[in-house]
Image 1: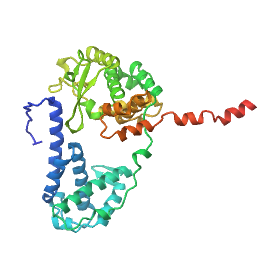
Image 2 (image 1 turned 120 degrees about the vertical axis):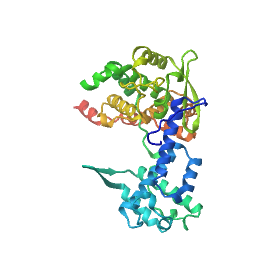
Image 3 (image 1 turned 180 degrees about the horizontal axis):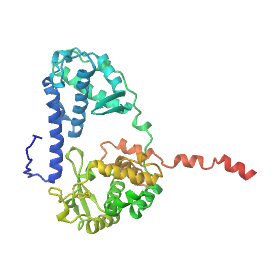
Image 4 (image 1 turned 90 degrees about the vertical axis):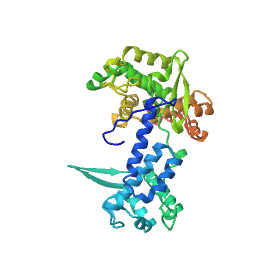
Length: 377
């Protein structure tokens, strides 16, 4: 976004203003990063713009900027003093071993900022994403004739568990009930948390209910508006990835908690900041809640449900998994659940169907060796 300039929206589409502005914000961030990168990557920028989702495009560009900064700060592969100054010739001389050393560097590194040193430790999943970003870049530069060789075949493999190998992390039904009891009554909150709970308990409950009923993605919930809901028709509209719209039906529980929030807690118009009048979930400052604030809220209440530390609480994506496993556990069709959660492939939904939440408990519940020993005594 041009510094010092005000964005005026002339929106003739059916999308709400906040959705259009959010998309503009992401695109602007992409364009700002592109200005920091070498000009010979123009074809790569065009490829990303035309072939991947805006958030994916932003992730790729962020990784590429980090790679170029690494070249400047940590290697002698370039004489450039800024990422923008790296030359096409210098990039053409990069070998697969150089990229492998970069990936190894990403496992653990430090960044000095002002008076602090930040230590970064990355998982194989993060390393695989960075490797993927750099691979796409080099493949596209090779296709565009910018570099002479496709060096990506020489990149070291990174072992990442397949989706079917990962343990599905989701709340169990009894943990969901404990979580909802906590947000309803304030149970198990610290004194400081209780002060905030008094002001936001209806909002927080509505957020949790929406997550565990529909398995919404974080950005889908964060961008909801009051005008998204048509209570007379019993439905609401959400905007999903790939510019898709979806109409979701309201059930009695969701209708009840939303109505309670809107009528008894949501700020009056005079306390809402300009530009946030239609936002469904507001902060105490009268602004649309940020994704980070919603994420922190979810971690807090899920940690109570699981009786663990706040740090070990679950993310909103785990509540998406909770919705999936609970729906399938209630006997709903895997294809219906796929449609509700907007999974591209039914195989994704199948992972939740294969996850039998209590199977381990069932296997060991009749293997109470110590209890049996005591009974014999």
